[in-house]
Length: 404
Image 1 (cartoon, one colour):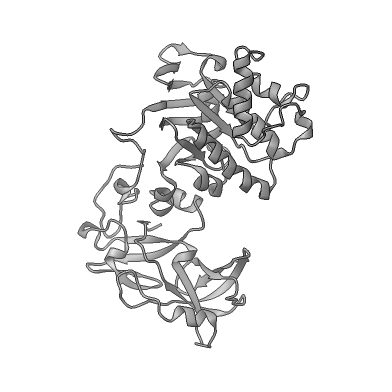
Image 2 (cartoon, helix red, strand yellow):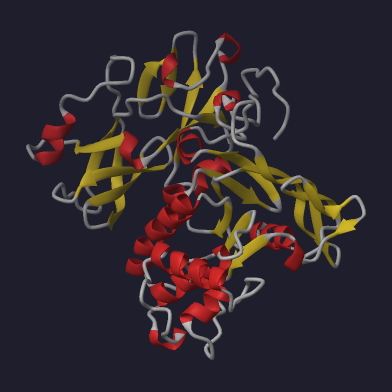
């Protein structure tokens, strides 16, 4: 991210102006101790940089998810933490011990780090209990047997100890893999796309279950995924990655509501960017004129700046422009701007719609601007090609960026 600079009419900063208000690292003097810390970690493969100067800290007991598209460096970062890759430069600390960097290279098995792989990697010739006990120093001891029983109860597999992994469902095998990784009580647990091999329904069920298990175990965990819904639903904090770098890290709410870059805004949910211009008292957009305080972090230094305002489908409503009666028109009647001013409208045409079950997401090509998306109840149906007006109904401040 570039340093803050005072914008002119032609130019604003490349960083979101209210970035300082977002939860960037979750750190605090009174918070839990840091268990995992990466400092300026770089990893290159044959001249290509996969991880480029990553700084990251993870607090005791939290679940942090590395989120990003394929090839962004998140899996390489996870493997570097595990010791499966050696960083080209930078340091990795686990529980205050340097495990990579400053001349230290601690092998994976000595890092006190557990890992749950995509394939679960269970041993088919061992029973469920034997799989869970595999990583313990003395798997045949009475203490190990007690530990295994506790973990099987924690993951909801009490009574399954004598079964073979081949007799289990995908979700049950995942629970066994999780119990096995938790058995040695690692300082950090790593989860590599843990739900990618499950069907959609089971994926939702298991991410809730895994979140519960990690919370009850009080374990510090780092997960990797490209699924933004998964990351937002189970994580205490999320680090969004792109091209080997961390774009933004913070709570799921702070990232979704206060994205510091267009990339983060677009990667987390459906995003549309409406052109606008900031004046002394208002922001003039292609969907109406609104009080300037609608935009997050705007001060007098931004007067005259041309911007793109982030709007998500639930920030917008549409209505037929001919004023015909109907459920959408009726619902649109009382809408007002965030500051109580007059609602603006913009004519456009529905060019696409997505039916999700509970709702429709309509794609509207504005006559005087970009394509925007509007969210409506599934009972409120508008046809493709129909002329509509678009209204802003957001009851919160909106993020914005320099005009593209």
